[in-house]
Amino acid sequence: EAGVTQFPSHSVIEKGQTVTLRCDPISGHDNLYWYRRVMGKEIKFLLHFVKESKQDESGMPNNRFLAERTGGTYSTLKVQPAELEDSGVYFCASSQLQGLTEAFFGQGTRLTVV
Amino acid sequence: AQSVTQLGSHVSVSEGALVLLRCNYSSSVPPYLFWYVQYPNQGLQLLLKYTTGATLVKGINGFEAEFKKSETSFHLTKPSAHMSDAAEYFCAVSDLNDMRFGAGTRLTVKP
Image (cartoon, rainbow over all chains, first blue to last red; front, side, top):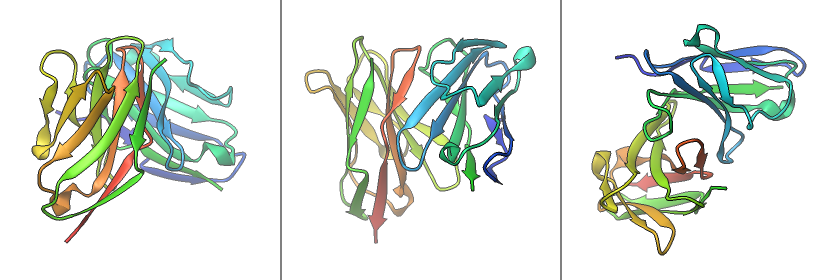
């Protein structure tokens, strides 16, 4: 069974550009989470989807970040326009059940904004 | 609100020595506690978790952790370190709706 897959694994963009990160959860997992780790700090929650609906987006830093999960399958996280402080590793996780007792994480996307 | 504190951003041990990575948490509800490991260029992998029941939890690769409510701790241990244990380790606490992570501890294993 395929795990959680994230694309791309690395992205380097200039300040002001747009970047879209993608997460393919484990098939059948209704719950999808986005997290971000900025430069050696803790991994912070961004948002949580249940199927195609945003259950909790309290961690989204500002309106330059837009997450979607059309059809309740894969999810995208768009940053537009990117700023230097957006650099970090973006993790996606999925779980079958509501709640985070069994969340599976992807390998992360390392975003560098220069 | 929940939070996690991992004491020591870097820990270095010799091969064969005891590994002890410290984690303290705060939670207003009975917590679910996790340890994740991230090897270079890989994702977060679950090492072990505590939900209910036995407070000593055994995980993969010989790791274990003990939930101590009185100390609000969930320290990770392994009796004998291997070179392959070199990685970054994250402690996390969850109330099922939200998972909070510590800042991570990078473990170095010296030959």
